[in-house]
Image (cartoon, rainbow, N blue to C red; front, side, top):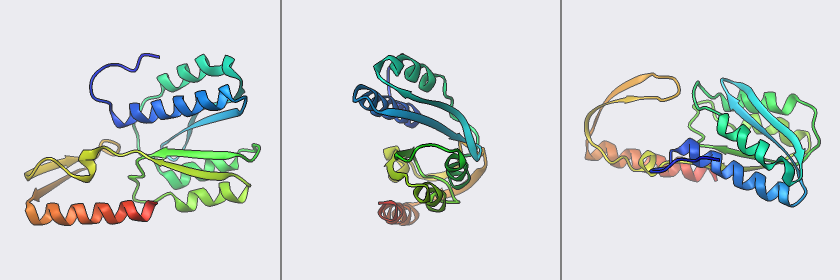
Length: 170
């Protein structure tokens, strides 16, 4: 799997996490399935597969995934829960940057007997922006823009709210 050089993008980091967790599970003889959530649905799936022989296919699957679109976590998780599958551990790897949240989407999975775990992936710049002044922010998923004037007071408020949000997700 070619992960490239230089700074790791959040999505590439999430791919690496999924590859590492998948490799551990497959080496242990566990069965795994991977769902890629995008645009309010499961847009791609791998598995169920078992054994180390599935590792190259898992890596190929993860490598072909591309970020983009708007992720409605609640809708995507509910849709994932609808497919009949054996109860097991469900690991959500996400930045959780979704205005609709994710908690109500996990409930149907838990109701079907799945255990849910969360790996929260964020860039340090998302918690402590390294810039200030007049800016135009662009949402990478929705492409919506927002003009702001980021001064010391607003930056302090942003950091406080970001920390409070992080505390809520734990």
